[in-house]
Amino acid sequence: MITVIIPCLNERANINLIKQNIGLFNNCKHIIVDGSSRDASSAAFIKEKLNFIVTKPSRGLQLRKGAEASNTKWLLFLHADTKLNKKNISDIYSFMLVKNTFKVGFFKIKFRNKLILANLISNWANLRTKIFKLPFGDQGLLISRYYYFKLGGHPKEKIMEDLEFILKVPKKNRLLLNSKISTSFRKYQKNGIFLQGITHLFCQIIFLLNFKKGLIHKIYKKNEK
Image (tube, rainbow, N blue to C red; front, side, top):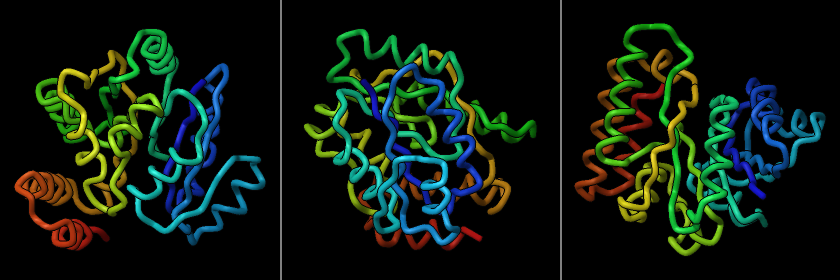
């Protein structure tokens, strides 16, 4: 069995999408990890009978706490604004049926926005993932619970948690799945397409150069509106 782990922060508007994603599985568990939202998310989760826990607002911590609260063989980490489809579900089950206990799987990505720039950004992300096998959180992450904790889990910091975790996995054990998941383009639209892209890339580079995470977080948050 698999547990879908969804970190949330003020994601009440995406509750229907979360329910749709969970409903695509024949049999799964789910854990929503709310980072102390201020949009009455908890009341909405209770109303919709969704399983959730509450933590401090830090995505790395939220992902880790979700994994700790799980009890299934497989874990799927998924962002609240990501939309799964039937091909994704088929890829997930195929991955779990093979001996992939010590491997991780992730999807190609596309944005739910028809802008040419959105398409260019997703194409670059898919090319980067194909060449370097360095996915980010919005591409989903499929992994066995055993391997997740053997690797030490996600760091508790608020920044670069997805990149730091995937770098623990040997490149040969990182598998790009065939299908694409769709996600929101909202951060680019809110913060500016060019500025968001440049800031994200710059933060990735200085992270790989071992700059302090506190500095990286300040730079990243400074661009957010």
